[in-house]
View (spheres, rainbow, N blue to C red):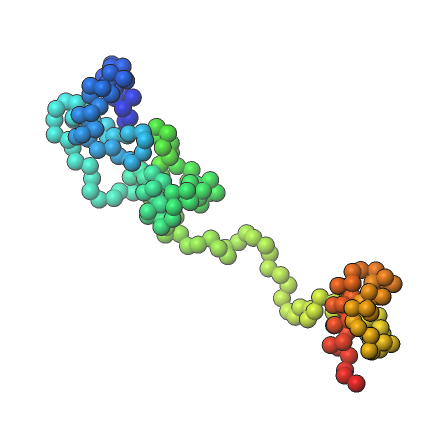
Length: 192
């Protein structure tokens, strides 16, 4: 691979002169390898064009060592180019190789990522919680349930919000917590 600046340097021509005199013909006959602002060409095709020989044909079939830019890799993976770059940063893909300011990945590494099973559920993450029965309610076993049940028994006709306020003032915690405790205690107390 070679870019226009290096072609001009190898020809011994200043880049601006080369771009005015040679680049238009080169761009017309030799396709750039990547669709980017920096034009990168196949070195053998450039040399053939400069020597006035027929251009060697680029391979038609994909090869494992083909270099792909983020757009080509994204098309293979079925994601966006920014996702490809993020995958490289996060370790889901190799970091790639930077050529003339364009990050490229070997087709092989993209294919490996495509063929690899999802990493979801394969280690890492939070450890599994305990197995077996869990608490039926967050206040199960809370000693305040006894206080709530006693308050309901002592004042069965009082509004729960008022009981909750009295209990909160007397024993601490929020009124809303005591409302929940009263509801839990009422659900456990058999109807009379």
